[in-house]
Image (cartoon, rainbow, N blue to C red; front, side):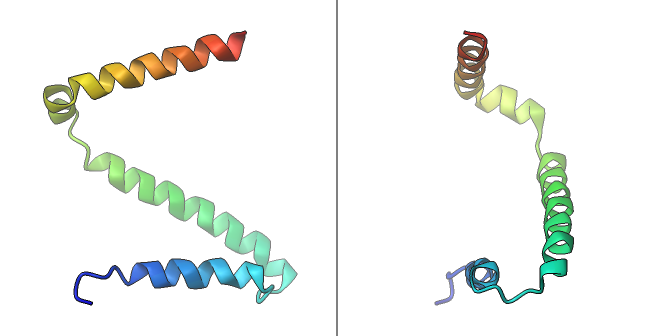
Length: 79
């Protein structure tokens, strides 16, 4: 099990906590706020490692598909 990502066990355990109501009601709001801030920190960390020059160099087709999908979302959102 050398290649098994053990953080998955943590995700499963964390998803069971609200399912079985293991937290007091007043903690749910605090944990919810903390999860939002931690998600923002994670997204910033991912974004800081992105090299836009490598995306433009290697992912021109993917960027074009993304632009088209975004355009369709805007058009169908207006309709």
